[in-house]
Length: 613
Ligand code: ADP
Ligand code: MG
Image (tube, rainbow, N blue to C red; front, side, top):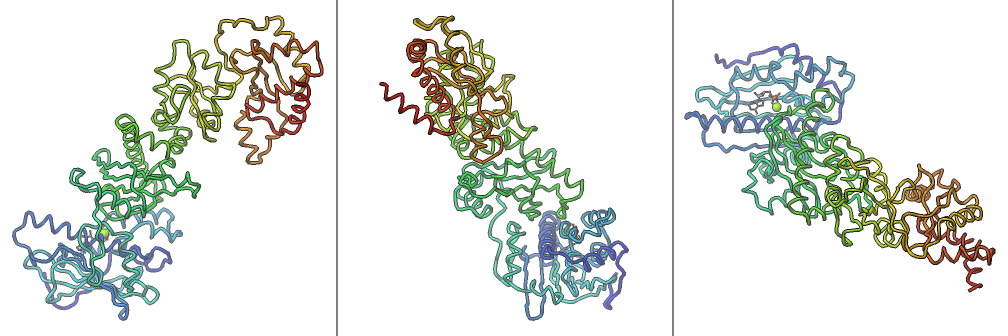
């Protein structure tokens, strides 16, 4: 059927409802109409390319497959033209006059569920073609189908309930959408504004997009290309463009999956962890695309929190372009994506650790903080994350690390727990009194240098069925070592510990002979189960309440150490001096434990002791 006089049509009732809301709702994301129309143009070109494969006769065969956007700020118009598949008269009626596509349906459904009050909803759904009416006084769609004998038509409407279709002469293949902008939307006739919008949402559309004759999309959607054909420089360039980065990527994962979801993803770990430099907390930066068109540059739930250092792109064909970030259905979809991508990325790290250990260690040094955070907080992925942790230990060289799995292979048959010590650095842990008992028994101890480590170890709790235990915890029991020559006898020890307890009074909870001291005379163990020395230091640094509660420790003495033996004798011969030595030994132990709060009394005492030398 063809006619040369304009014919008037009523919109379908649902479309009327939709248009009414689109036109009368005030909301901020009006600019997405550009994205919607450009993606329709891109779809139409894609369809034409497919049609070319099977059909011999195509109208206007030689036209370039491109998208032309033109702005006219005097006339206040924006035009989006493609040389794609076009629409016949019937298709204009069906596609633009009835509610055929899923996005609009979902939108209306959400409105039905009480969303009408939320005017922002429109911004979260792209309402496809109809979004043009957010900014338009009138919309004209000039179109001609690829089918040879179909004439061209212009479809026009002001969005108020009806539209007209009229035949036009001289129409090229494809569609040309001319929008006469409302006065308060005139900014969309500004070239710079439109350029910014197209670059934001449509930078990777595979057909050339020309704005007023100038090509503005020059970056390829690298994630959809075959890995083997992509050069290293191309990846780097893409990373810099996409992540607005200046460094080079440290690690890269490019993968695709078909089941359970169709996913193409290109993920990067940056060289540097800016959070570590003390800059602000990272925001999600892996952008979500659907067939090269941006849906959300910073999707919140696409990845778990601890993966917030990742950059890159996830593209899924399964996403409706007009995805809402609010409906349950879409949430479930994002959750599914999250699951698949996280699992894949963890597997990637595991492979890196196995096959490129040095690179992985360097990664962990820079980004280990996030892995620890995940291990401590992400219950779903805890097991895999715990495997990815790395520590220096009493058996590694300085700067070299071990995994928990490797630690476990070195455990003797007697050893039940995995031991660790928290301290500011290797030297301080090694010179402290806590390690020696473990060393003497050939027990490996992991070294933790970061403030969060204690929290992490407490949350991770165990690995491979073995408890993670702080080596300076009062409950740790170590096996007996053969009694060294010349130690105080059990009776003497009893006398001495009794005397020490009496002398030190309130400052100690208990005094006993140590099973873990080898070279040092004394050590202090925390008597407070709920606050480790490290935690206390941290709370003090943060001025937290509770850090000042009177401190009571368990003092352990080394019965074969010369100082302890001397003290046993001095106790009766020079009781005054012995008392000073006892106090000083306790302070020494507290210093090693990082628990001495105020050194002034200690210095005075030490001077007194030195007088007697
Ligand atoms: P969707 O793109 O989700 O299908 P839209 O509302 O954006 O929904 O578009 C509705 C329909 O109109 C499309 O499915 C398509 O058939 C048709 N259409 C829109 N723009 C064009 C175009 N530039 N060329 C050809 N057909 C188009
Ligand atoms: Mg569309």
